[in-house]
Each structure stands twice: as C-alpha cells, then as structure tokens.
Length: 148
Image 1 (tube, rainbow, N blue to C red):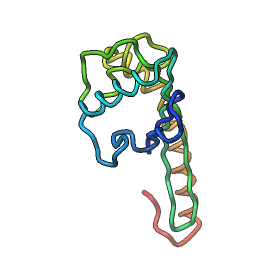
Image 2: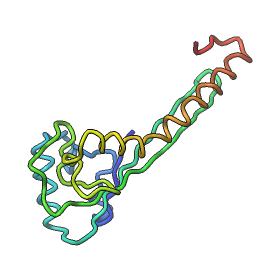
Image 3: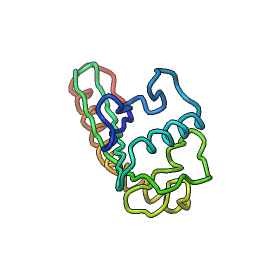
C-alpha cells in the first residue's frame, strides 16, 4: 500500500492513499494530476514543502492467524519548477525531489533511481525472508501444507 502526507496541506486536503483521486473520487490522468498540483502549490506557497511517501507491505498467514508488516518512508521536496519530463504513471516525479538529491525524480539517471530504490526499499528485502521462514516454521509444526 502507498499513501502520502504533505506537510503544508490541511487535513481535509491530504490525499492519503488516494494519490491519483485528488478531491473528487475518480482517478485522474497524469496531466490532470500535474494540473492539480500546479494549482495547489500556487495556493500554498512556501519553501521546503515536504511530501512524505509511506510504503507498506504485509504478509498474512490465515491458517495460523499470523501477520507481518513493514513500512518505509521516502521524503521528497517540491522543486522550484516542474520538469518537462513526465514519467507515465508517476506524474508527481516531475516536481518532487527525493531527499538526498538536487533534482526531480524524472531527471535522475538510471543509476541514481536504482540507488534511491535500494535506499528506500531495502528494509522490505531484509524482512521478507525472515517472514517466509517464520511462516514455513509455523506450517511445519501443523498439518497445513508448507509454502514450498
């Protein structure tokens, strides 16, 4: 699951998990998302405006009533200008600068994007094998089929 918190918006304007449904419940096109944020950013000027992306994963073993979950955050800051590059499906990457970089996501090189993904998502890769091992151990102590 993905959600977002934006530090300069009031609670009633927070998109939460509805990152592409901004305001009216229908999913918007990339261009509509960009237009929405151009207008919103103009209404809420400031410096160091922060978008905090929350990424979560969970594994649920229904047979044993066991759940594992993990959440990571990625902070991004609003660029002074929108990039002319638009990454299909990820329009906000045209104006959000990931923490630790000095340009919008669409301007990052392939290597920089890989480094960002590794930094943000490595906790998922670290916990998942443990979860699977624990789930396998639960399965091996019961009459339930194993995960293998």
